Length: 401
Image (cartoon, rainbow, N blue to C red; front, side, top):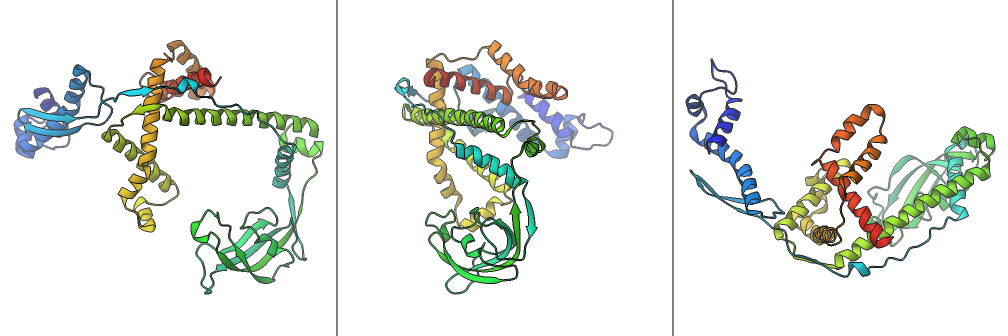
């Protein structure tokens, strides 16, 4: 324990001020008098545990797949017990018979027209008019929604809300009721929400809305002339040439989406081909990670996790149980893939890896390339991620063609 105690003493003394001594150079006896033997012993054990555990795992060739649970039996001399989940037995069979039919992506003329129409909409001009609103007009409205008892419903109120009548940005049936209203006019009407509406409390619910028309704008769309297209797209091309390029881009996107669809289906079926008993400790760790992901998602939306629990009236155990099935599925797939990589001898050579790194680095500006290349050194997260992606690509190429 002496080497660990020496490290502990040095680290503790960094934060202990003793007149006449520099930080990190306080003599042991004086440090012991200042903080106590127990603090030094506990700090020593804290340093000794991870290093000695790693040495033991490597010496005994234990294939640990989870964080160890440590039970300290004696402190002096240090004696402890570490319980850890080990790599389970994995059997994968039948994956070579998985067939995922390839669908040839088709681009409809309407899809091209819709893209061009969106370009026109982004460059439309608006003119306020003193007439009744009609389909295609851009309007601004105030509205409120009430239940059968006349109480204002949550999330059904908005002021100066902009929309184009007929685009379907609001609940079906709502926009039809705006046709015929002039600025300054008000109207009440009932709308029944769809049975599959995303917000469950409103599914199939009849809501009475009160609307105040604030403004009616007539929308003028620009014509798709060569001059307009050049101004917007920066290319001196005819409408037919633009349509041809748009079709090619759509075809490329759809081929990529089809590839992703087939890959996901292959992985779904691969789970069914994998037999493995997931260690409980590993399952809990995976759920921990999923909960952390969920907390981050909530945080990005400005919702604290404890506030979410309060609003949904859910217990943390219920949230963990909701994710248990997905956690087991993720782990099963992970073990299955690792087994197939070994069985099929799917490897990434250093040459392949270096070539891909050069390609990735080359996508960045010259001034950033050295920094990016540093991220892809041996043992880094980015390097492991890239290597895994390349293995997956080889797997899909072999079994999906």
